[in-house]
Image (cartoon, rainbow, N blue to C red; front, side):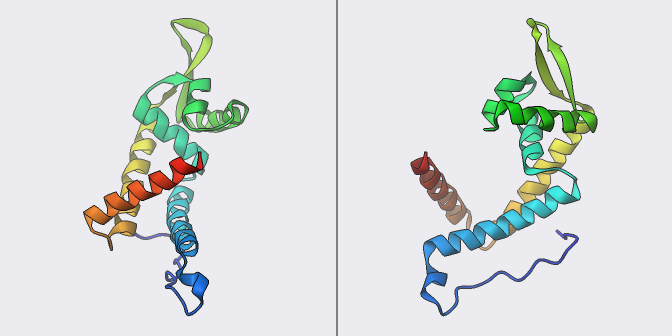
Length: 154
């Protein structure tokens, strides 16, 4: 997988104590992963928040704006410009909910579905490449540990 700009070589723990600390290594690994992910999004002219909208609608199907905002943890007021930007690009439609005509339903267009599928595929490829030094068991353990850490932060 190639990106437009060459990425710097990953850093390895150095001679300083803090460079071998868990917080530092997590930060460096996270920064590298985010750099790869952000590069993929930039090539497709998609922001991280737009990514969440596209993938959420792709995985969950049509839904209302407030439901979407809650699902992707975005303030409903901030969801409006996000939704507007995707609608302007022809990636999603805002239709009327047949059950409640006051409510707008968000649905991916064909182009939106194609882009969401592409994003899922390429993101999985980037993740596979990034985690390739680890065995399948180590990858599962890493995910579990990260989930445990994040749940403890709530």
